[in-house]
Image (cartoon, rainbow, N blue to C red; front, top):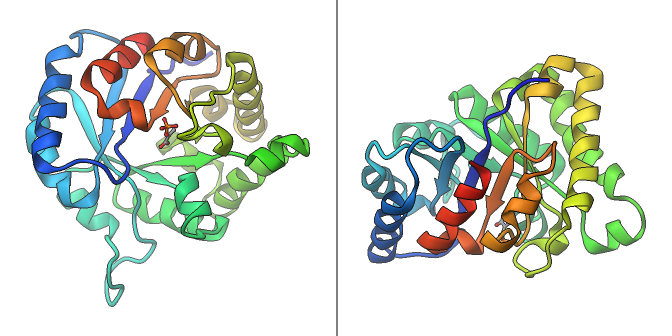
Length: 252
Ligand code: PEP
């Protein structure tokens, strides 16, 4: 089986200020243990990307954005293109985060176009997928997650996943304090991997699949110990340097 380097990504959502970000990044760089195996990523809001990139210096933490426009450039007021993200140093971008899907109405098709836009600029998309509580209770988890992945793969082909990361984030666990158990998450991760492996065994074995949904220092180790969980996408707990550093250590 392929060795997958764990990845822990912090999604700052719409939080922070220049002063708070400096405290957070400097605290994080002080606390991260050198030589640990996990790759670390932070995703600040757009206005803070450039400055956060400078604060990160060569500290071994990657910079990502929380969303990207599907269009290349032009009259799209309020949007930010993949080329702009690349220009300010982003190497990753979240696409299809549940808040984009459910609060801002982004469709599977739009998410697929954003995925393509990111890759066109050599930015690694972190494709977020996950079911709502109603969908889970109706026994539709695997259908929903499959549909969300298929929407991308039918446009881009399975090979595109060699340059992407998947984040399984059950909507009922995001920002709620309710976490999927290790076994619940592992079941979905294994299904995602098997689905991809059925199309391409190498990519199925090598694609990183993160878990997201109320990950904290206290539950990170149990989740990251699961065979198909390759790290986490962390919201609230990524805003505290000590908590996030402990989560990162749990993946190392
Ligand atoms: C997220 O924003 O992707 C997330 C998982 O948030 P939280 O960790 O706060 O649940």
